[in-house]
Length: 132
Picture 1 (cartoon, one colour):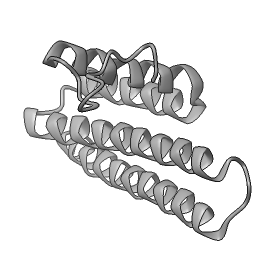
Picture 2: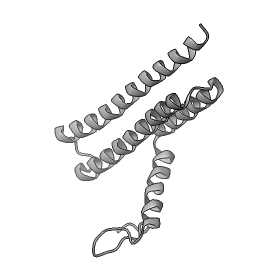
Picture 3: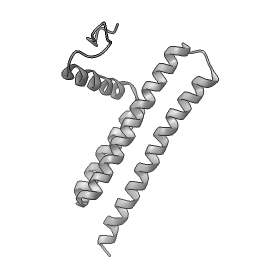
Picture 4: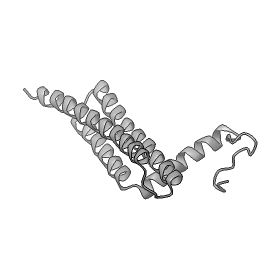
């Protein structure tokens, strides 16, 4: 059992909601510390929020941007967890199903990223149209 997770040994569940939040935030922190793409995505998200503030986008546009940012970050967390589980199960031995799992999870991140680019393009178009 992981010493950083004080789970109930009988159920494997967290003992309370605070522990659940702590474990979830630990997962985010560890991903940010070890995954370069996650850090890049965080920087892109911060840049997008700053651009929204500077360009004074409307509330609806800001919500779209925020959703896109969190969607990409959530997909990256899922991708990272699938990669870790796949590596644990295969113990580094190549297997076509392991490759499929990793590629599919990476594909989910790619789709989320494309969605974020579409949102950025729509919002940027709206901002540009204000000047004409």
